[in-house]
Image 1 (cartoon, helix red, strand yellow):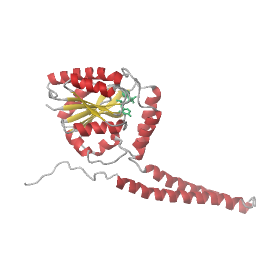
Image 2 (tube, helix red, strand yellow; image 1 turned 135 degrees about the vertical axis):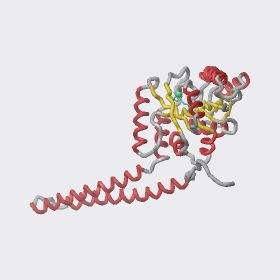
Image 3 (cartoon, protein in one colour; image 1 turned 180 degrees about the horizontal axis):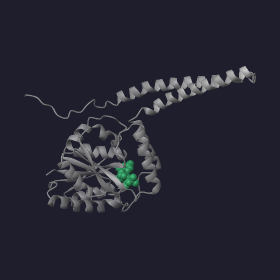
Image 4 (cartoon, helix red, strand yellow; image 1 turned 45 degrees about the horizontal axis):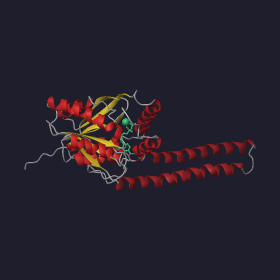
Length: 315
Ligand code: UDP
Ligand code: MG
């Protein structure tokens, strides 16, 4: 039996916390009866600098409910950092962590399946949204377009998986070696290379309160998701430069033709040719500098070079 913790980031979630705790407690009791998790499992709430009474509610729940623990951040650090704070703190307490948003829009029934998958030898279990009908249409379309853009940029991530996942203690310990600042967990976790599987997650509506992810937060997460993992956009600049030079070459051919048949306008060809040629060389130059900056970027992230799976010795 494993000791499990759920980790839920909370930003102004006073309206949902009580109900979420009730539902999680019921689920935990059932899983304890089924001998899936141990009786000292935990429900961890991370208060991400809420300006409402969320922390008071968490303190109250902690008093009443032996399962509930709370972590209070000094200020709003953002969803990804709040999850990281929760996971890194809880890994000292438990064998596995399930991260789930405090509004419990994700499918609670997926949690026992995640634990079963862990018992079958998986270290990472991703919740994959099979139905997003609870999400507004615009959010659904933009999210799916983003997953596609991301994979075309060569970022390895799981399609339609957000931050609802189970990580074993080992996965958490490896994740702790990533020292980067712009964290995007959906991209970092596949880098661990541990055995993983997926379970279905049917999304439901938010029971109360409103979404804390506005358009600008979503855009900044999307931008992090690409720029923290891919230097492909830099190569795009170099390719653009090459296209400019090819265009200049075509214009050169046209100019030669105009000279031969005598339709050339004085001054036009030198001007237009220099614009495209110089433009092309400038773009290539910028791109080359970009490649070096991309390398510096990868160096400063100090990502671990490898994770050892097992070692055979005669000790
Ligand atoms: N959240 C957070 N810090 C923030 C913004 C959001 O901890 O700065 C939490 C929020 O309380 C919720 C989760 O992140 O538990 C997901 O947010 P939300 O449900 O509003 O996003 P949506 O489900 O609409 O994408
Ligand atoms: Mg939500």
